[in-house]
Amino acid sequence: MGIQAPYPDLDELLASMGEGGSRLCGIDASEAGAGNISVFVGWDVELRRRFPLTEEIALPVPVPALAGRTVLATGSGRRLRQIAADPLANVGAVRVHDGGRTGTLHTHPSRLFERLTSELNSHLAVHQDQVAARDLPFHAVVHAQPPHLTYLSHLAAYRDTAAMNRRILRWEPELIVAVPGGVGVLEFMVPGSPALMEANVAGLRAFEVVLWSKHGVMARSDLSVTRAVDRIEYVETGARYEHLDLMSGGHGEGLTDDELRQVAAAFGVTDSPWVP
Image (cartoon, rainbow, N blue to C red; front, side, top):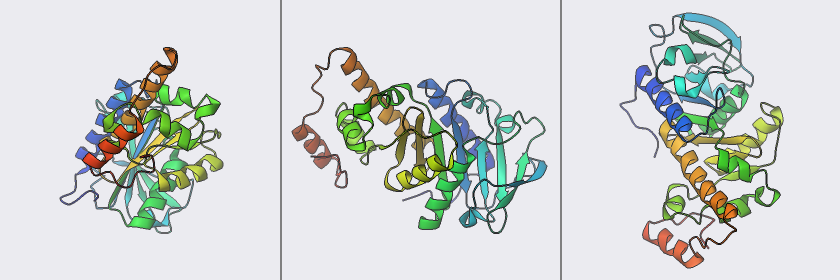
């Protein structure tokens, strides 16, 4: 079940982006200007008072399912930790035109970026795919660079979806409950490239978190920005335990198959491919 009316207003949406950005920085998943956040808003929001400046822009990918609606996105090079203190300087709002190929970018006079995030193509493509398929009124997408999960993707043995999930979901009972689908693993692709965009869209159809090997992750949620961030935090926690185990010689047992089955049964997890 996705977000329900009454829907949040613009200030609440910006606050949620700030909260999510702050938490990502709190787990060291967004160094300096790394990471980005976007939100599709499928209801009318008043932009003029917060974002009085406008300019017409071409969108990097066509998004006809988003036409007439708004996408909030962080600016390129902006620090996610600064969104909470000054969202108007760090976030822009795009009202998508009919046909989904162009839009009006709304910004504040205090804007500190020249353009929106360099990963805008991936953000928009995921919103387009999910909204078109499920007629969502709201959709959040978060890209971050959690260090332990990203590190594991530098090890060839972990650059496999099944292998990664077997290793990281065994460390806490909460993991299989909070992220029953686990994380999908993509091979390395150049950041911002069409190849990464296409693979990412396909990955996020099957998973709510996708790992971009040797780079970072992208997560989605149709409930809130913080829910997407929670998913990143959960899988990063599993990766941190796995890293600790590697550093200590691999002696940790983790949850056994039987214990994992008991947890899944107790919490009604019936659709996870990672429960033996």
